[in-house]
Image 1 (cartoon, rainbow, N blue to C red):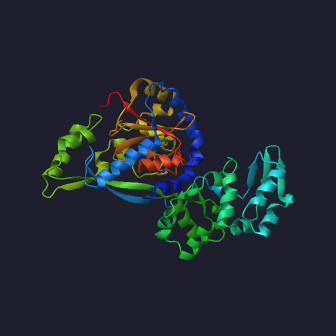
Image 2 (tube, rainbow, N blue to C red):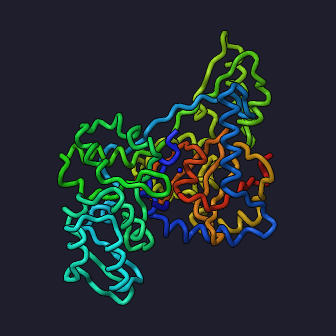
Image 3 (tube, rainbow, N blue to C red):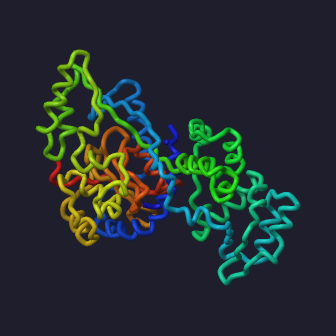
Length: 417
């Protein structure tokens, strides 16, 4: 669902998740109602600090309970150039100023860092559509291109307050140095990247981009496809577990073999420890069947007719199941399972724990599965364009809570020790 990286904020590049946020939010609100007041909530800031400590410890050579992990970031993208919120992104630009009167909007435009000709265009009330709940404008595309970064920031920050302005509500966000990093290997010509940069603005300390419509007519079809793949690529990781003769294979087997799977993975881990010089293995081989098979795949690639319905909740609850339980499509059944079979974790998470995110209203908006260090297994939304991936927990959080205002809860199945 929707619409969290080193590019911590490049997780926002998948803001396309917002196209399914309402459907997922509605179903997961039921999750929230199942939780009792005694459950342990952890604020994002506290979790972020813990994650940073884990990463720092790993980079300094200290190994966590899951062993020594090597992480390689890969920009996973569907190569057909499709993206689910194309209607919202590519429609004729319309700016809706919600609950704003004519005098107030006039004062606002007069206060913006606009050139005289830009002010004249925006203050021309012949292009204003006065509504009972606000004012709608259809800005000329030349105006969209001509805005300075500051003026764009001033106007778009106001537009972002209304859900009617989808592009401004859900811009693509990058760290200050993340934009150049993201487009460095995109394959787009430097001149075209410079054009994209012209349309960026700053908000909340991030570099933002939202005017995809303006770029479509000026890029070649293959360049526009490259742009889409670059913007919508999911920041996922390949994780490898390194084992040497000094490794505590018993402890690693207990960690990675949770869910009654120790005998399945013990021979492999022990064999790697006996290998001269040690060895490493992709952790996908250590995952339960559902996660192992779905990892790095897209729903539309499966022949399973239910694949496009498999959201984050279905994915998290079926993590340890050899055969997926389709009852998790039923919200009432999911609520009952959470009520009776899960409990909160008052400490550090472990392999297979469910991670639930809640907004300020206490509504659950996302669930995923904790894997190791600061990585989770996640399916971000009911969307055929969203794959099953391994992400940094902080990246995932930033998808759903850009301003770090949410809460996080770790939950563990009572049958998993």
